[in-house]
Length: 288
Image (cartoon, rainbow, N blue to C red; front, side, top):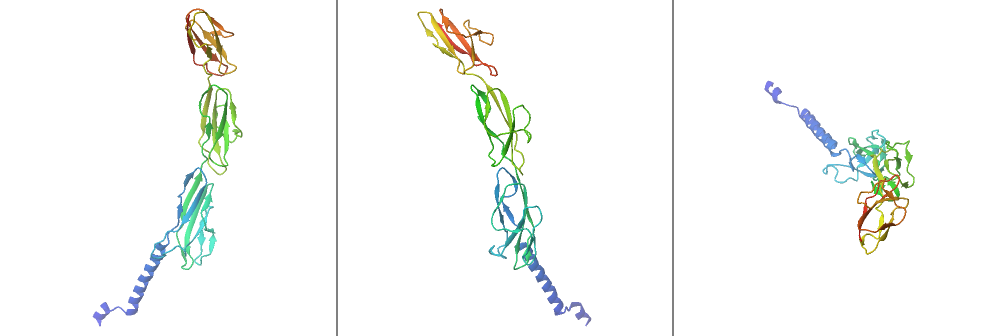
């Protein structure tokens, strides 16, 4: 009897052990057969609204199709809660992709009402930043007044801008219509949409430089003296010129009428206008 007491295990005890082992195996199988849902696309920073699909992840051996799997989600940062009977206590039942257009922490769980199974919580955060402004035309030197458009590809955004060198903010000018630029200036602009982060600040610098003046006739060989006419390409410009091969500047002779050339020489001319750089030098050679 003593030997039997060491090695004999009652059948009902063995059954209990095997039953517990089997229960643990089933429980483990259920726990891993319903993973937390995934989000497409994953969270991140976006420059336009995004449609988010929430998908269930399962082990095929447990749920060969997703027909019995439902998803509950929240968009306010709270945890979705689903009772074992499939009742959604907190959150909404996912039906179709969600349009997200402002900062959102999306949380979701998968659940199977028939089995009373609820997955862990899946999380994904979406933030948004307005696309930076684009200037048309952009930085450059121009011979004429410019009409400047400022645009952001972010729908519904507001553009704030400055022309005094300061950084734009909500207290700055609001862009409504194209700006007419007629003197050197640097425009700085930023785009903003409610619930989104400000865009990067962009700037464009506009300077003005008239085209070289027109010289007529534009040089050549002549038998007799010739009267040369100088005209600006931009209305309102003054023309300064020289006939001694020196480079004209603001202090050179101001053009007021035809210049008579009666010997071989070069005529050089520039256009000047207040608020603009001086033009390049126009040159014409005359041989008489």
